[in-house]
Length: 401
Ligand SMILES: [Fe+2]
Image 1 (cartoon, rainbow, N blue to C red):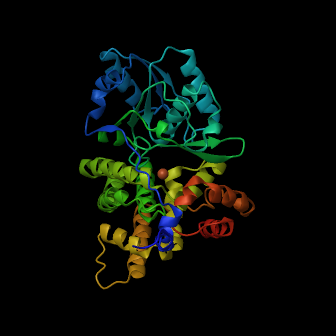
Image 2 (image 1 turned 60 degrees about the horizontal axis):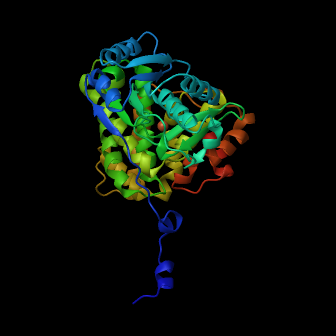
Image 3 (image 1 turned 180 degrees about the vertical axis):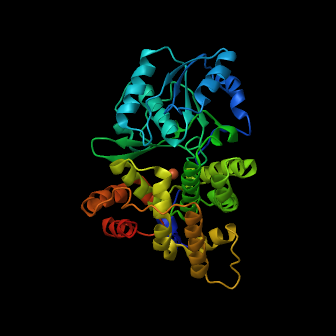
C-alpha cells in the first residue's frame, strides 16, 4: 500500500493549485418565446405582491411597461428604480438599496442585461446586510446574512450570463476599477430568458454580448480551476456561437439564430459559474472601471491576444474548443489546433465588424501600469491557465492597444 507522502508527491499541478472543485447552483429559468408573459406567476410564486423593478430604463423598447402590465394583471404592484447604468456604480447600488429599505417591497425584479442584473444583485446583498457598504462585499463569499428578498431576473441580452451566475460586477468609483462580488447569495431566485426581449437588442450590442458569451465559454474551459462538468455546456455554447452569432447580429429577424444565442449565452454562463474565468475578463473589468468601456466589446478586443498568450498552458483544451467550433483537427498537434481555433475567433470578430482597439477606447500609455495592476489583482486572474503577474499583464494589455 503506498504511503500517503508518496501519494501527495504524485499530485498534479492542477490538484495542488485547486484541490477542491466547487459546483455552484444556478436558478430555475423559463426559456422561450413569450416567457416574459409568465412573470406574473413567477413573481407570485416567489411571494411577491409589491416589487421594486431595477433597470437602466430600456428607453424606447416598451419592455418595462409591458412587463409592469403583466405583473399588474397578476396582482403584483411595482415601482421602478431606473438609475442603474452600464458598468453599474457603487453609489447607484447604495441609492437603490436605500429606496428598497424605505418602501414596503417584498421582492426585486431586474429587467435588463448584465449591468442591471448585477446592480440588482448587489442591492439585494446590501439590503440584506442592513445597508452595509457594497464595497465590503468585494471578493469571494463575503455575505454573512441570508437574503431577505427574492430576486426575479429578466434578461434582455444574449451574453451576460448574470441571470444564472453568482457574480456581480460593480464599479468602485473612487478607485475607478470594477469589483467582483462572488457569492452564492448573488444568484437570482429565478430567471427568465425570452428571445422576444433579446431580439430588441441593436445589432452592435448583439455582436458585443455574443462575444462576451464566447469569452465566458473559452475562459471556463481553459480555466486553471479545471471544473470538468463545465466542459459540456461550454463546448456546446462554442458550437452554437460559431453557428449563430454572425447571423443573429446581421439579421435581427433571424429567429432561429436569436434563439440559439439565448441558449448559448446561458450554457456559457452555467459553465463559467463553476469553472471561473481568466484575464480576458480581468482586462475588461479594468477597462470598464477606468474608461466605462462596454464589457462585451472589451472582451472581443482582448480575446485573440489572450488566447495566444494562454495557448501553451493548455493546448489540449484548445483542441477541444477547435473541434467544438467545427475545425477538423485530425493530424494536427494540439498547438496547431489551438492556433486554428484562435484564427477562427479573429475571423468571427472581423465578421462582426469589430475593429476597435483598447487605444480607441481611451487607453493611454500612462494608464497601463494602473490598469495592469487592477487586472492582475482581479479575481478572474486566478482562473487564468497561464501564470500571470503585473509584467505579463502589462504586455498583453499593450498588445491590445
Ligand atoms: Fe462577461
